Image (cartoon, rainbow, N blue to C red):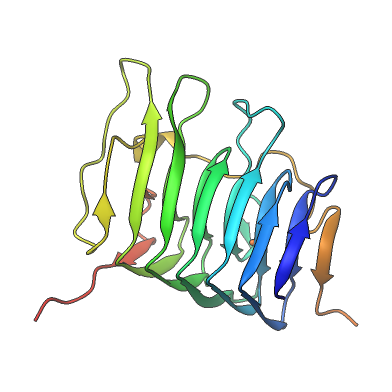
Length: 220
């Protein structure tokens, strides 16, 4: 996909299903309620695109609104027998309700490089995440700039700065606070604007599960 997509009225802007291959390049995607781009069990590259205004209008505390979502979970917490992989490079993500980029579930993986993610700043209604790798997902994360993720209640904890080679600014929501990305979607594709089903997706946050992995680039 390239070009402009106004996903107003849709839960998902661009969706790739199991076994599909696709790319989102030089695109502008905005106004989806749940996700800008979903890769559920496919091989997808997202590059040089701008994704924004993902979530409710206005934003609130419900746990959805993610710019790019790579997952193997047909329902939250239950991985299907699929793999989701690809690259996420050179994108600009801002004005999202919950998070910028999420790689979630056993068999989900991505290379995440040179993206700029900007949260909504100091808010008390939701703990945002810039890049999240969780629930068995894995990713190589480097060269990203992540800022503007502040959750204002006084008891908020920060997990610290991981050594990823990415420029990190501001505070993050604690990893223990990010139990879910979507709340009540019954399937990965519930009202998508651009759909390829394959039958005919804090600064950097990581799940506390030991099966989830984020790989920092090696330094010479």
